[in-house]
Length: 481
Ligand SMILES: *Cc1c(COP(=O)(O)O)cnc(C)c1O
Image (tube, rainbow, N blue to C red; front, side, top):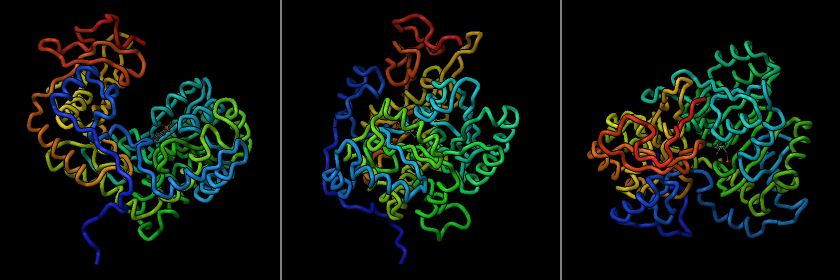
């Protein structure tokens, strides 16, 4: 018998209380935190969907591993467990531990980047882009056609646009392109997967021009499971084998273990190239630590080694992908526009389409995040104009192309009733959506404004200026280039 109900494939041994607050308290907290949910104490959040990074629940086996972590400075047993787990999975000979994904990015791009170089990708994640740019190189994305059409579902909307990629290589010259990065799943575009076929085609092009292809594999297991579900010829293949085939196509990988390794901290850089690895280890010692710990405690290495095996359990992956889709379907039933289909690690609500009464310069995605917290104590994050707004050379303000509210789902943390609650709160919110007001800026730094900006609800007659009349510092928030 195939049962219809897909259950959480774990039972709960250790629990944490949730932070209940009243609407009145939350209104006060919102005012105190200047309508920026990054400034709210986590204790005051009931359901925290800010990120799936480092927020997962570790298993009893992982906690057991924590207790037997070997904290020796050099040659710790936990390092060898970590190395073996990664070698078994990826087949790469060189394994370099780092404290989190961006440290791997910093090391590799400071080695191969620099002015006049281009890194190409299906979509660089924001820290990946920042590290490419910090080296002086340019990060260029080639998302598949249709990836930005949020309403139209597709099985592999995370894919690379192969033709655009090859055209670019021909124009810029392969010698100026030190790496192609395939992000699996494609985080910036809604956690959408990349097909095996697309990985193969990208690898063919990279081989043809002698460009190394690396996976940014934070969510490799979710991607592999999507291949099993959606790509022809894989429905009988064990997910572990699919993942191994993905790694086999690439020359190396960088990973944030805060995602598909169920760890609260950690990451790695792994590859075949021994010369690159030797260079990387020199940089590792400079900023992270010795080769066999790289910025991590022995116990972290142990937890990652175990997590990388656990994440390929197909009962887990079935539950993971199904539970994300469950939230997405619940919101769609309420008529809420989301990025379809739901991705692996979260649901992205299209705030622009949901609330056309809020102008982009009044930050619809951020306003929706604040409203969701006010009504239900739920924390998501706005991805839109507050993050990506800019000004052209003439001084005109250019809002972001998209206004999305990301609801990321921590791994193994919330149950179905928590998600039912989120859906119920949204039901209330959409009925009263006209009452949701845009926001204006009181104070904000010029870079990465979304983390620390201070905002307040916009008052009547002030909706047209992105600078917001109530602002304390009067200079342009989004300066001319
Ligand atoms: C999270 C993430 C990173 C960065 O990893 P950190 O551990 O947060 O430094 C890089 N790439 C992708 C695709 C990610 O999701």
